Amino acid sequence: MVSDFDTDQIIVEDNIVTYRSLSYFIVEINDKFRPDEFDKYDVILLDIQDESLLHFAISEIRTHVNPRIYLKPIFILNTTEYKEVIISNLSDGVVSSISHIPSIESKIISILSKIERINHPKVLGFDSQMINRTLNLMYTRGKKNLEPLPYFHSGIGYYYPELSINFHHRDESAALKILDIAENEGLFQSEFYERVYLCNNCNGGYLNYREVCPKCNSSDSKSQDLVHHFPCAYVGPIDDFRNSIDDQLDCPKCNKTLRHIGVDYDKPSVLYTCNSCHHRFQDYYTKAKCTTCGTENDVEHLVAHSIKRFIMTKKGESVAINGYINIEKQLETIPGTVTMEIFKVLLQYELQRLHTAGYHSNIGYLHVERAAQVSGILGLEKQKELMSDLVQMLRSNINPSDFVSFYNSSTIIFSYVDKNYDDAKIVIDEMMDLSNRLISKTFEKVKIDLKMDLEPLTLGNEVEQTVNSMVFPLSKL
Ligand SMILES: [Zn+2]
Ligand SMILES: [Zn+2]
Ligand SMILES: [Zn+2]
Image (cartoon, rainbow, N blue to C red; front, side):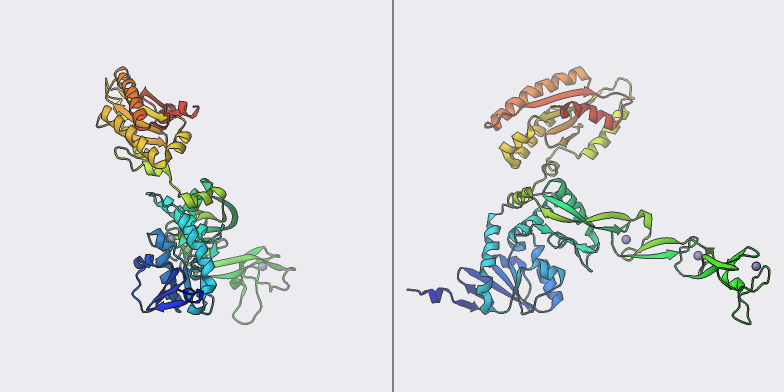
């Protein structure tokens, strides 16, 4: 029989510590660093003191593709706390020695139980993946707030650890775009924190602001006071008033000696002389030189971004557990379809072809009614399957040269080229019957209503106008 004392022992074997039900893997500085193998253990203990190596180890784990690894509890074996942004925010804490492992056990159990609750749907879109990773990390650590942290190594000056870690500092501004998407989806609420100005060319935040010559852009200039002599109204740089003998100022125009500032002369402003092209000017330009890519930005052309604090909403919390899928991005991967942008380009060509005498062309839509309810019942995977089936059915009835796209997650938009409207309409109506039968067979549990229509293309119409007039009736459904 095993006593309580025995089961609670801390067992150390090579680099593996076992305490009660959990295993801890000790990673040392001289190890070959292989995060792929960390999945076997419950906790990673980093026995690394060097800050840059710690930084590296934590980054490698937190950016790993496998959620079981990037969410892994990480503790640092040390006696001091780290202040560095990535080390302190993306590790779960510090433990002074192996004998103190019992003190971190409850925290680990809490993290592990939350990791267990998370579902990881197959997500294709990069933005969706980033949103999921961020929410997952925050949720498992019981974090509600995503704060922008001022950080020297950040490409934009501010760092959202759980998200920004996934980006090279060159691409970090992309994190702001992802946070906007997440906020628009209702996963976060935000509060204004700061405004940053980024390079117009590379979105870098390291800018050197300086005053430059309006003629040659050189920042090498000297400034001197401009002097206004009241009696004769002469205005010129102070050098014009100096003489080679004494400190007195003499007016070059009327030869009088200047007496008292404010009484017979004053200094209304400053005059700059460019040391490079000798141009004299009173108003300099302010330019921001990007220290990352070298671009000389006019300050008015810098890209302004709001840096916000984000607070996870209830919806965000639920998405953290169930996964975020942007259905429209998922639909883009359905074979036989093009993106809406390409659709519009092709439609432009088609409108041009109407100039050919006797040429007829059409545009149509296929819409799933009550899409939100349908998607709620079917789930995202099944919804994708449904839309994919509809695309296949559509493709087999129209010409191979026709183009098909998703106007939104419940509406397919397509061309029906080189056919007069009446003939095309007959095909479409038959297709409507066919597709209703097809989906009622495949998706038995839910009643799906389809709506389909066709319109002839009109000579002289614009692309936007054509698409909008086609789908406009749908917005009223
Ligand atoms: Zn004078
Ligand atoms: Zn100059
Ligand atoms: Zn730049």
